[in-house]
Image (cartoon, rainbow, N blue to C red; front, side):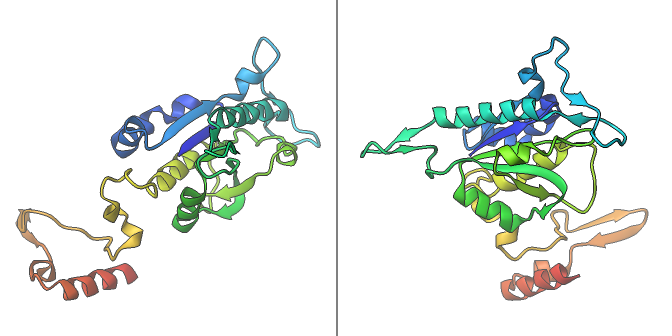
Length: 232
């Protein structure tokens, strides 16, 4: 899986991608993350990409053309990886599909684990467009077929954090990223409450113990207990 991120702030991703599971997934070549900064596709010496909105209103709007050229570059990188089958049939990626293009928007469809699972199963290249300021000129959506998505019922200052969330959620669906695929919580019975050693500890004179059911060894009852915790 290769993620192609269109963003004005690629360094915002450094910390999260440089730690833990995603870092290992990148090192193990399970995933790749490439960045395309619209500023690199401007024509003026100041690399300006924003202008005031037509129709009035506060803030600035990101111009369409630099974003379009950034997306074109992402597409060209996908096409560089064309794989030729034994019959000589060109394929844009291992699935033979064009990349999926996501447009991050607070009014987009809700992004979910099931959405991520289907995306990971169907596509090997994903383009994620991160907005900033008052947004991106809507004409970009007329040039490319995009799918508008939202990671939640709230508005953020930019699309970088939602993009990180999407990379994380989709990557978890790729075999080998989590090491043991049974670690995928949504595919098994689990509880929001987990416990480990010691069995009992004291804090300010009060004892805190692991629920007895988890020490019983009765797996069927343990599974029922986990289901009951899920409903709360």
